Image (tube, rainbow, N blue to C red):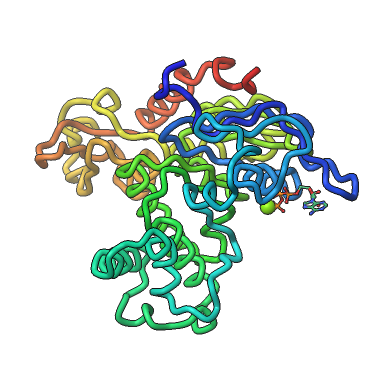
Length: 345
Ligand SMILES: Nc1ncnc2c1ncn2[C@@H]1O[C@H](COP(=O)(O)OP(=O)(O)OP(=O)(O)O)[C@@H](O)[C@H]1O
Ligand SMILES: [Mg+2]
């Protein structure tokens, strides 16, 4: 296997039984690939955090192996291992006696970065997570809200662009609007930097928005399905997954799909409505718009459809509710099971 294809994190028949006899993970085989964001979802207590924490040796497996960048973690120095892998948790673990700025600069300090470089990096990161440096840099963690603390935790984990990030409910305490913004920003920088991410979340919407692949766990770290978001929503492999994904699967799919040229009916919208006296279409959407947005705009558009324009603003035709449905079918037809749905064996 070439290096490019080698997984960044590999779980090989991993089992974790805690001292009191609780079996958190029975026998897990799972690969996290280079540059991907793999989301781990599942009900409370199914073994997500345990799985994540075995990657940086905060938890030791009872049997089996966890291999990070080709190396069995059992033989690595935990401190060195954690320096290579950013770690963000729900209750952040900020240093209470250090300011926000000092917290974010923790790893740059350890690595001996120059002052100016550290300072400009901290400023960029605080802006990125939506905390104005002039207001927040000198505050202490106890002077922040829970969501603000969490954002500092995200900034701190990103400070040195670690190749691998482990994230456990990293956006959990952030309000819905801030959360969405943070997700979008985070998704953008992750793609830019090519960071490999293992993300634990309760939130299936967050998982399908951010992830390249989603692993659904049931109790005991049992892998119910491993698939890309469209396939997961369109073709849940088991009743448990269908239940977890919920009835909103099709609606969530709309959020992942984009309006393509093939979905557009060429021609003039006024003609489509039968040439009535009323100008049929006043609003418009762009090619490439998310399908949920298109459907939303259709809901308030006059009958006959919605005008579609390209990047340059030139009209290319109309979109109707029917064409949104066709687009949805195109997505789900492309998601034939079972390739990639089952756990790796
Ligand atoms: N230190 C421990 N000792 C004993 N049992 C533990 C320990 N830590 C976790 N467990 C148990 O292991 C199981 C898996 O826990 P884990 O924290 O991995 O779940 P989770 O999927 O992250 O849940 P949540 O979504 O609630 O965070 C649970 O039954 C939990 O009670
Ligand atoms: Mg957990």
